[in-house]
Length: 343
Image (cartoon, rainbow, N blue to C red):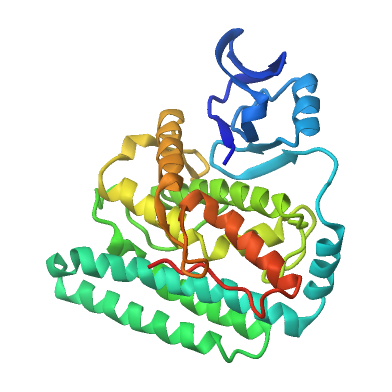
């Protein structure tokens, strides 16, 4: 796995020096890294990068993503499109065929709901004995409802029905998400998922982690020759990486949600690690953002067994493995798309 460079200082400037990328603040060099060691750069800086660096990254196949301080994707710089034109053609034809699309969407959502259930089950297993009876009952009911939704996904006849079941699962899962939080309840309380902008600290952390996951999923798809704009679950919209959003679904609970819960429950983040804007939005401070990114990279190094491939791999490789399995399905090597189910 090549590295992703995260530039978190908002007043940083990126430039090229020989075959290195250099990060400067107020004219002082803060760090450098050889270009050949990178697969991507995620930049929170408002100043940007030099044209020479942009050209070098494009030529070397290094994608440069610009993200707002809140973690919202803004833009992406990349070189000439490469990949497998035959795979992309099959991808486009499949996206236009409702029956074939349903097979893939069913896989995405089966993995997503099963992993949401796994997050709830993990909380019940680890902390259920110490919970208030009413809260434990609510989590038990949520676990049973998510199990039921997982079963109902299998015979769902079309994508619209599948989307409806996804919405039901999200309502159940986020309806009990606050019960999974055991940190400072005064500072970290979750009532409803809010995105643009995040309206509380938990949503700000989730949105930031989802942005990082989206970058990784898009890179995984492009590495296997897909067009990340053409999805199966998410509808096409100009500028939206719909297929990357599709691939994210089954990985959100495992990579992002679990990390958010760990950071809050272990009190690695506190109320002062967030900034509340005048308009009501909430974002991480610069220092907290760096700590979350370190935890994100460490989380991706955790190893686990892949349920379909029956091999041990780092969590950071799962998006790449799922993209590969999707490509194998579209080529006809697999009858269906095997989702990643966390155990």
